Image 1 (cartoon, rainbow, N blue to C red):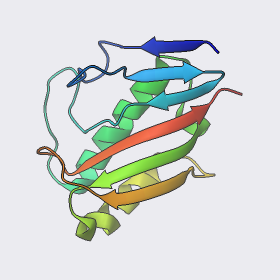
Image 2: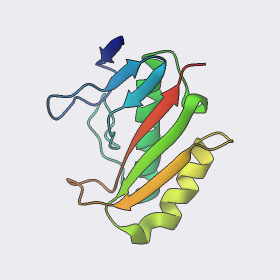
Image 3: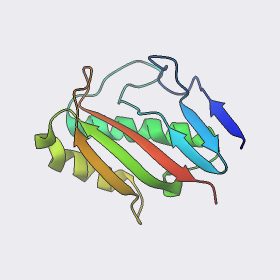
Image 4: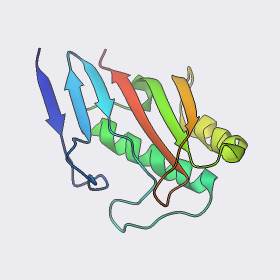
Amino acid sequence: MAKNAYVSDELPRPAGPYSQVVEVNGIVYTAGFGPHDPRTGELPEGVGAQTEGVIRNLERALAVVGLTLADVVKTTVHLADLGDFAAFNEAYGRMFPAPYPVRTTVGSTLNGILVEIDAVAIRS
């Protein structure tokens, strides 16, 4: 089993000892990304804008291995407040292409952000 790990300056810096992207046998796993702009560190306001920022970070992470959001088959979403689900869902639905990946959404205590998402993608 070949396991390749990737870290890119185009992504927010890891907050600990973990890879941003790992690929094993054509399956790509991303770390959980928050909404921080990797170039400026800026944090967008509101769950809709933060969702867009997170998904842009996921796009960057997938691009490191030559994939796109269309290759994503599963996401796990962490929301600081499940009451924000409608605004999150609207932004998520605009940014991910159909057919949408399967998704699990949970309420989580997040460190100063409103949303975090990790993804699993398949290299076809």
